Length: 449
Picture 1 (cartoon, one colour):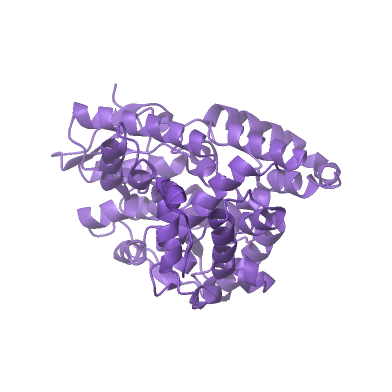
Picture 2 (tube, one colour):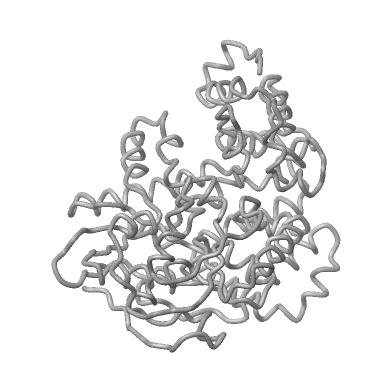
């Protein structure tokens, strides 16, 4: 694609990076075939190619974001399916991230939109605030019809109430910073992201990962890293995202200085995609460029690490049929596709692929709050494909997908690492216990002082 950016514009490293991405695009349109919003809406401007044209016009012309640009960029899930499809290697993720930051800097949203987005950004990344918000949401569920009837914002408030659980898990023993020593001879030492929303909604995922790793001789440390910044990063709030990221980088490198780290492990693939991109985010900041690149190089999804570690024979036999849902941030963002299925098969499960598995479920971070109608249609489409293969259980590696898909089906849905933990001697995942699948067991998790 030909561009006409001025030399003054290209002096800005963000603009220079986006200009390079734009020049890579040959506007072939292959991306339209795998874009969820184009699939649903049929509007060229709701395809990656259409959004690229809008972004080019906005950035090249030095324009403030228009209402039209904001509408179509807001509808983008950042699922990155287009990046998997693109034959030219267009790095759409970095381009749309730049566009979102430009929108936040140049466009004044309506008051109700600003307030909602500020509320999401001020609550979700902070576990204590988020826990309180979830308690209030549970109490407010009976008021959903009234909330839904409010003009302009009702659909989003209703979506927030719908997404809230009926109860909140107790605080996890792994909720604080600490060390979880491995059993037997030590084979390695890793740090693990505690996370923000996941630590409130599903602390058991990290517990399962820690048990699994400890049984295989891996020492797990949890630092006080806080939110990784992914949620606000994808809302275009770059200053906030970098503040979170710097805190995480400092916390993990402090742990690395105390003792060698083999990896920084993540159990939420949406977070993993962002952390692996820290090197790019901080490429122009001398104080953090090398540190961020180091953290990105250390970061792995938990299944990447466990596969390299090697699983022993399954401790128990299972005849469960597992539908594996590959989160977009896993398959498109991190290019991790076969590893989770390989591990599940090694653990003794029968694994089935989900038809149309490359299409997003509609979760996409805060998307199912900010764009609830499109998110709902994508969820229903995903659930229909899953139910067609008649699995006993659904497995995936991202809390957002679990929350989203779980609202549309009665099939139990679990984190992949929960099944791996159970198969190799850990307790039965709670979702399977509630569904009456398997025999329950309890193994307490205690951090060393």
